[in-house]
Image (cartoon, rainbow, N blue to C red; front, side):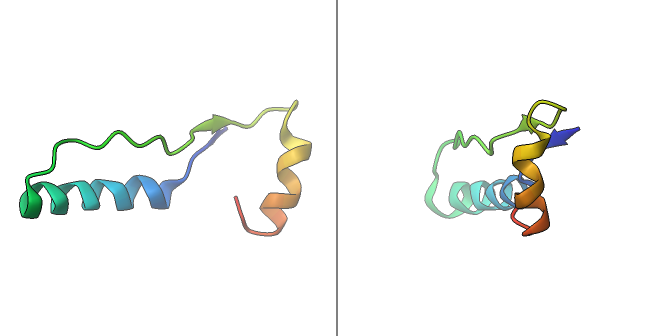
Length: 54
């Protein structure tokens, strides 16, 4: 399973379009921290999932 931050991926795409059109900004390179959930790291993620932070 891939763990990604979909909100940031969508937001930064729209932000890039607006900045490019309005201010002629070049491309932004923003790491939205894609990661993989597996048996080895699932225990660390369960509390974050239950708290709705992931």
